[in-house]
Length: 142
Image (cartoon, rainbow, N blue to C red; front, side):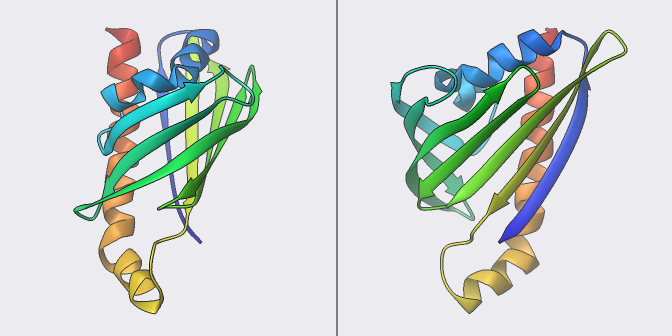
């Protein structure tokens, strides 16, 4: 399993950050490669939805379930085209929130997929993670 991580300070309360994270229907507005979210069922813990994500020039579809949702942590597990676990951690800091995300994922394919991941996809995913955090910050502070 591959992994990318990122963190950022957002000048709003952890409650506002969590509210934005739980608004999964709006996630394509701040997540660059998330093309579409649909069939959202529920809110918070147990919420499920379908998605289409673009990685390495290819689109993948799957589903996500929010398996943990507390005031300071949210965990999302995806199945389908790109099995992954997204862990969001929120820490109050300096009148705002330090937000950290860790994404552990499995690249589709076999040995060639693993090689491509190390050479290209992991760097691209790190860039996407950093851009996602920057977009969320701009959205919440704007």
